[in-house]
Image 1 (cartoon, rainbow, N blue to C red):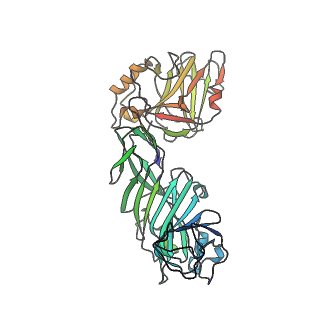
Image 2 (image 1 turned 120 degrees about the vertical axis):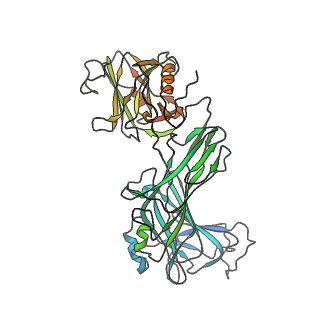
Image 3 (image 1 turned 45 degrees about the horizontal axis):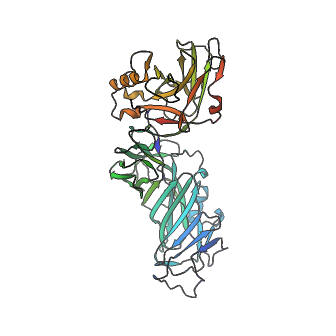
Length: 483
């Protein structure tokens, strides 16, 4: 199957700040690691541990290291209502997901940078796909009245949690503005999902898009980044792509992403400061660092299927001769019966090849003696996603397979072959630049191959109704069979 799975590389920067009031309104925060407020704010580099102040809802933290301030002077955190925004930032109320926080005491300064971190639920943004996160800028007001970006801006997305942070040495009005652009990441076309075999590498790139889904030209200054504390892999190179190499079998969660610079003067169609210009037009550039934490598999090349893709929804059904419940026109493509497979969420399956493997030896797994039938092209099917009808030439159990047809000049000759012969035939017709194993996929339920049950006792029957109740099936890429 063609790999179009996008790296979940994305950006969301959020806000903290304070108003111009003489004293903060309310005290919606808690403090950990702090002593009683001192009578004078004398910084101490010897105070152990520092302290952290957290908002009442737990979504905003101010982490103060010991070299910045000895103890909590009574820091407070309060989310401002739109009618409390500074006049020059009133337009932020109309900008989706923009926020301003009040951090007090007003005008507090530190002897070293403090880090402000906000947690955001990705579901707060409408129509946000799993592989996207919106770009939102975090800025603060300087002493001369101009606005500047937080230092060391970074974001880490870990599933549904987006943690955004930056550093500052003072408390001033701060605003976060949705730039109405999105950052993505992408895998090279040789792999399926975040998985590869020990001794091989995986390349990771990036892309950007507008809120409307149009592709944007990347910024002029971009550097892919990655690091991990795991011994399972290392990052071998940087450039326009990251290369991550597996060193031993196992599952881990590296942090990978991209560092880039946004310019106010970005050309049309290029990612830039966007909506920020309408509110804070004195900010000329913004440097950001984005990371995310994917589940990554380093697989044993001697024993495993290669690859793992997020679950895709499928439905499977069988019509026997005379049946029209699932195959309306009764076209079984030359078989005595037909198996209908439909994909509700195609994820790039359109145009790929797919078909059936009969479990000839009855061992419940694809093996050399099983029979592999000719593939069919996956195409729009009945106005409900993508699918195909494969002919059936006998009763029994079948596995559903998929093939990235772009990597082969043709399918092996013959309507049915022993699986060992079929694999050899595909190998002879291989024209791709990727690893041969990544061209194949087997649908599975959990860790087991999905079995399409064709029962002679039923004239019209949905396939494997017990398993189908789950509604989602994984696609294991890389059919690797050791003969």
